[in-house]
Image 1 (cartoon, rainbow, N blue to C red):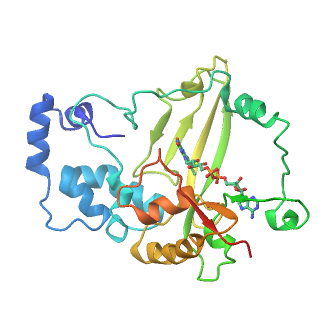
Image 2: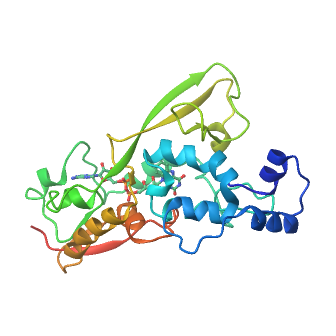
Length: 268
Ligand SMILES: Cc1cc2nc3c(=O)[nH]c(=O)nc-3n(C[C@H](O)[C@H](O)[C@H](O)COP(=O)(O)OP(=O)(O)OC[C@H]3O[C@@H](n4cnc5c(N)ncnc54)[C@H](O)[C@@H]3O)c2cc1C
């Protein structure tokens, strides 16, 4: 991913230029008057065959739902390119911390202004510690004790494997849209640049239960989210850092790189 000029040329044995690919996409795209579901987004851009090969199975695995049952935002964020750029994100600057994320966070947390308490629900300490303003970064429905109902999330199980070989796959992440129970395999050394005679990979198995990773973007869920959001916007001394919980519910073109939204609310 994403689908680009090389994808189309290799898959269909063609030799199109960028300009020709745009024409080709127009010829296979299905015209839709209204774009409401994830299926509409894709078939109106790349046609039925690419949709079936790349999106349908993957989406069903990832979300446990057919793309026709999911909000347009899910597949709208996946780019289609008529050039050879095969990066998922097209940001000009993309980087890794020089010594990795672990060192970066260790240095940040070494600040005398920061104290870390692991395995502690904020409710356990909120009355014990002095504070003027609280920033809450967890799920918004949990903050309100699920008073309007539970927001549905999709979760993942990660299967980590270390192999006695230098390289497992040619690139950082390979997606499996149609086969196997996992959606993708990532090999981290492509991303970190690590040199080692062994390699570590991770398989991602989507599942319904577990840590809340991806809000399920459907109209009824967005409506439920808005009820929580309305309460969170009451002025008070707590900030809910609703970030990824908020965005997919709210915007039809949810972006992975911009996922923060803050709102204030009363401490109860
Ligand atoms: C599989 C996967 C891959 C991703 N890949 C990318 C990527 O490549 N690039 C990218 O930019 N983003 C990626 N993301 C998204 C990114 O991980 C999130 O946007 C980011 O982690 C959000 O940070 P956060 O601090 O807002 O929330 P979180 O990282 O979820 O942190 C919230 C914290 O609040 C804690 N918490 C919750 N409730 C309570 C409570 N009651 N008391 C105390 N603490 C509590 C939780 O334990 C957690 O530590 C990915 C996400 C997933 C799931």
